Image 1 (tube, protein in one colour):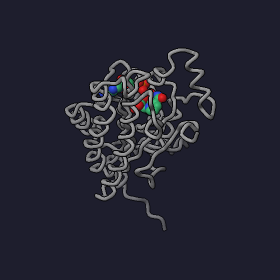
Image 2 (cartoon, protein in one colour):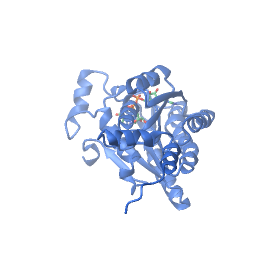
Image 3 (cartoon, helix red, strand yellow):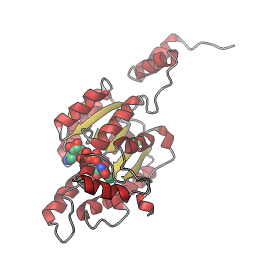
Amino acid sequence: MIVAPPRQAIVLLVTRHGGSLACRLQRAKEGIVAGRVADKVVLVTGGGSGIGRAAAALLAREGATVVVTDLNRNGGLETVQQIGGAASFLPHNTASDEDWRRVIADVLAEHGRLDGLVNNAGVSGPYPSTFESEDIELWRRIFAVNVEGVFLGCKHGVPAIRDSGGGSIVNLSSLAALVGTPELSAYGASKGAVRQFTKTVAMQCARKGYKVRCNSVHPGVIDTPMGGLLMKSDEMRERVRKRIPLGELGRPEDIGYGILFLISDESRYMTGAELVIDAGMSAI
Ligand SMILES: NC(=O)c1ccc[n+]([C@@H]2O[C@H](COP(=O)([O-])OP(=O)(O)OC[C@H]3O[C@@H](n4cnc5c(N)ncnc54)[C@H](O)[C@@H]3O)[C@@H](O)[C@H]2O)c1
């Protein structure tokens, strides 16, 4: 004999999940399958442009509540407007320890949990830029965002995700971490640091039993404002395109899908890994 659960138990389930289970039940009744990241609260830094914007939109489409952060207020608000109800914006300089403390506290106060973090904000500096032409100020500026920003994100994000029951961190590294980059010297070194630090965070979390996974994503040449710095003229763009084995520049959503996979539980058996999405460039 099948006994129906008492009504109080159903109410308890619904309220414990902040209403989102009720939403899923309603969607199930309507025959809509739950999204790949349904019920997750995910923070995306640098979500006001390019890859961060595409990732935020895909995560929201697949059921996540997305918190977009960026130095660029207008860009961040535009992303939130494009996504609609499931997203909100917080101003954020990822190179600032103080900002990270405020942002994580705001997310926990507003949503009560954090399940995913995409450390996407990054800067590339001028192009071309060799170690012979670069100065120490440029290195410090790039490392402050690309390396220290990711360190701070993991430092403050891990306890929040751990205390929410576990989840996933995705750090944006680059193809530049895997090959020599004579014309993007400081940038390449900073992305190499992100690649290595990701494995350190992954191993520390695994060792401590935190249930927090941490993986890096390595985009090739993606058509975003940052990617555009490498291709200031049509001629340069064509030259870059011809060097790509699959013969076309990447779209922001090509990387967004990889991020979505790593934030979702579909990648539950992955940590400390490198997801290379570069149309074959690192295989040349
Ligand atoms: N576009 C590419 O070809 C490419 C290739 C490999 C890796 N990546 C990496 O992917 C990530 C996203 O790149 P994109 O191409 O979308 O760049 P983008 O310039 O289009 O977007 C980067 C966003 O980060 C924000 N940002 C910069 N500094 C910040 C800070 N200190 N605090 C908060 N926000 C800040 C910017 O305002 C911007 O909205 C970066 O980490 C980049 O290094 C990009």
